[in-house]
Image 1 (cartoon, each protein chain N blue to C red):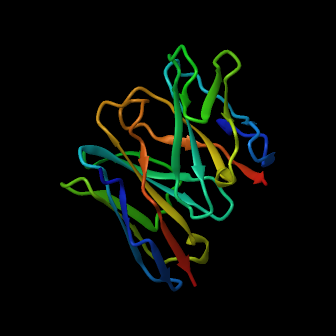
Image 2 (image 1 turned 180 degrees about the horizontal axis):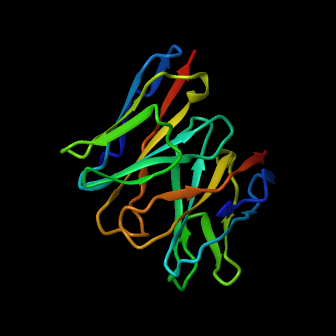
Length: 115
Length: 116
């Protein structure tokens, strides 16, 4: 079965540019989560969506926005990029009804480099 | 406040030996889940093992087992018969709450190096 798909795998942007990261969850997974992992850091939760509505918000900068579409895929939009935004961005998805169990699956990540 | 503590920034183990990676957590929820993930240098986040707070038996998945001590809020990962491919970062993580959209939060991680 296909896992969580993230695109692109690698992205290089200049300061002050914008970037859009995409996440395609596993089929029938209705919840999507975004994480940011800086070099040598643990993943930090940014934002999540459940049934196309924002369900939780973490340490996401105001320059970032995200949404979940009708097909449940999600996009993370990042504007006015800064050098400190260079990180590995993960998306995870989870199906309905797994409050604490299995099913929380990560994509391979998008490595964003801001130069 | 840090909800998940991993006190070992780095660990070394001889190939074929067992190793225990420590994890303690803090929650006031009665119902929660604990995860361990492996992150090799390639960057992907690989799910290893899961323990529910109401699970009476310790979880096992092949060479991985979770030593769950609920009263001590401890969820240590035991890797038996270490292999060179086990060299990676290991993250302990927790999912609190009672809804299907609750997020997982991570500890700081432990870097494991397996020595030939």
